[in-house]
Structure formats: C-alpha cells, structure tokens
Length: 239
Length: 290
Image (cartoon, rainbow over all chains, first blue to last red):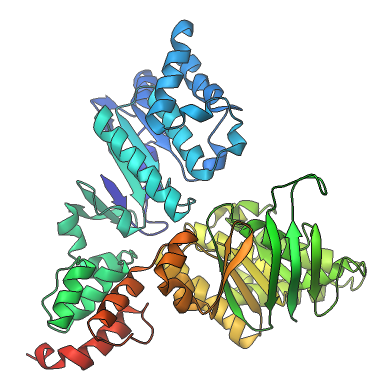
C-alpha cells in the first residue's frame, strides 16, 4: 500500500501510529488484532511492524552490518548460537552478504538502506513501513532498492506501506491512500486514484511528465490513456 | 566574479602515494550570472568538486582562481566568502534557538572586527529572509525546530544568502521536497540569478530539473569532465547519458520518437503544457475541435 501526499500532509504521522511511536488523540489503531495503545502488547507490536526512515546515515547502530543486525536480535533475546545464521540470512535477503564485516560508513546510501531493511527483516516482521526511504538515494540506487524490497515482499509475504510524494514510485502498488491536510482524500487501486489528476494536484502531488502531457491532450479532446506509454503517445500524435 | 579551475586534480590519499584520483585534470570556467547544473553518478567527483570550489579542500594539483586570483597561492582565504554552499538537507544543520540567531550567525562571523554594529547584521538577515519569502517580523523569534520541513529549508538557505554570496552552490536542494516546495525553491533561485546576478551551481540527479532550469550542464564521470554544454543537447545523447549514469528523461525520449516520425523538436520539451500546445497546433488541431 502506498501513502501519497505533499510535505506536511500527515503521512509520517500516520506511519508512526502504526507501531505505537505515536498514539492517536482519538480513535484506535490495531495491527493484526493488537491495539497500539495496549502497553502490554507494544513490544510484540513493534516486532511485527518495522520502520525504515529517510536518512540512510543515521539508522545503523553497529559498526559493521553483522553487528548492526545482531543488536536488534540480542535485544529480543535471539538464541546466541543461532545469531550468525540469522544475520547471514538477513544479509542474503538484501544482497549484502559480501559486506557482512565491512565498516557501515563505507557503504553507499543505497546499501545502508538495504542494511536497515535487513536489520528489520531479521526480527521477523509481518509489516514494513518505509517513510520516504528512497528520498536520499540517486535514481539508480532508488530503483535497485525498490527491486530488492519487492522481491522480499513477495518471498516473505510481508505487508509493505510505502510513503512517498513521488507518484512514479506508487504505480505498482495494490492500493494507494492519498492524503492532504491530515485527511484521507482517496483510497483505491492506482488506476482509480491516479485517474483523478485534478484531485492529485489539489493534494500537491505532481503528475510525472507523460501523464501530465496526457492530461493536457485529453483536455484538448484527444483520446489518450491517463497514464500512457511513450508508444501510445506517439501513436496518438502521429495518427 | 568568474571562477576557474585549471587542470585541477585531487586525491584523498597522501600526496603522490595515491593512484585513486577523485578528480583528474579538470578544466572548468564558471562565468558570472550563469545557471549551471552539475551531474554525475555517486562517486563521480561532484562532492569533491563542490568542496574545492568552497575552499573546504585544497587541490592536489592545478590552479583555482576567484576573480582571477588564486586564494591559495596568495593566501587570501576570504575570497571564498563570496561562494556560498547549501549542503544537502541543510535543515539538519539549523542549531540556534531562534530563526533570527540562525540566519544572523554567518554575517556575524563574517563582519566580526570589520563592522561591530548589529544594524548591518540585521539588514543582511532582513534581506535574506525576504529573499526566501519569509517575513522577518513574524519569524524572527520562532524556534527553527518548530517549522515545517519546507520552511526549515528556506531558513537554512537564508542563512547562506545572508553572507551575500556571488556564487551559490546547492547540493541537491530539492531532495525530499514536494512539488510545491520545488517550485518555490526554483522561483527563488531564478530571482536571485536574474535580479541579483548571483551565479548558481546546482548539483542535481533529476534530468527534468537540469533541462527546465539550467542553461549549462557539467557532467562528471570518474573524476573527469565528461560533458559540458547545453543540457538538452547532452541529455538527448542517449549513449552518453547512460554511460554517465544519467537517466534520459521521458520528455526527450518522446521528443526523439516524434522527431523520427517527422515532427520537429518542440521548444521547452520539458513543459507538458507547451508540448501539448505545439503538437496540437501542428498536427492535431483539426481533430481537437469538437
């Protein structure tokens, strides 16, 4: 599920409610039947709902990837003799096995985000919440991180909540929640939500180039899909 | 104030021992009033170049001049005062208890000893805040950490502008900003560029940004200048763009396909409204009318 909206729309606040980092002033949040307000269950809740934040550089606590992943595992009482195997498994999942004992600061931004993902995965979550986790990565690293995450999501059957204000990142989502001013303005499949360019603009979300052009052409009466490919545009324009 | 790099090299290893050059034989001249984009994949030397231009690193070889003078050879580090740097995520560096104190920090340091009077500092802060579109009277006493992300970034940029730089370097200033925030920022940069004559050097990962805003694009690859020219020309060269780790923007890919079908390259190809208007008048006007 993608959470889409401009800066200050309430995306991050909502995300922080999912594992009880913030509690609602009114209403309740439950995850897999666990209420976030129930302190007795919060420990279990946080294992189930793991979060990855924007800045790759301030999420690691260990000096090496192995140490970093061990930190979380030791905290939840993972059996000592099974630590190494779990660390290796988690690093394997994100493709960082070769960097197991390298200094964390020598990893690239994309690799540091993969490490943050591995540290979360090791704890066996059911949900991953990514709060603009690709915002600080360059285009190549951003794309690669998304691929890695997608593979893991399918293999581990995780629920992923992907927060962004880049529309092009959410085209493949099962569902999109569009937020503005602390309210949910639309929920639905990408085709339903993204087919309302006016609503997106109102919510401060910019259409990528091709849909923006399609919108102009549609308004002029041309028959173009809302989210066209380059081929479709060429066909329409040169017909 | 022209800034030139003549045959500049830089290595992070101790002199002579390193074979890994972060920059190799770089020649760049930046003229006053230019709006330049700097691009290249991670590790291509962009950050090193920025740190050389701001005097944070001395070149290992070659010569840098500001206004024709080499600040290292002539021991005039204050020449670098004319070059302002907005780091990536500058809002992480706000540190004072009030917005006023944060923006005033730079000019206070710069004017220390020369002009002890607070009026001059206040004048600088006032100008910088209004340049970023924030009214000083209502913002001066607020705590920087209670501002929104976009507001923080504007305050952080005001802190650099208060030094009245002639060349303003920004390291990915739109990262993490939404569409509205990006528009506001670029309006500001163009205003500074046009009205105050401030030279802009913009480190960017977004080809659309380079196309729409810069008149010149510098592309670094493996520590050398791989390209220096009009953004549209460089980015339209698909093999070149790919080799340098740049994404070819959809607008140019579309324009290229249309050109192959005999439609001329639209003016302002990055602007969907402009492209639609041109395409419609040329080939779709008859059909567009109901």
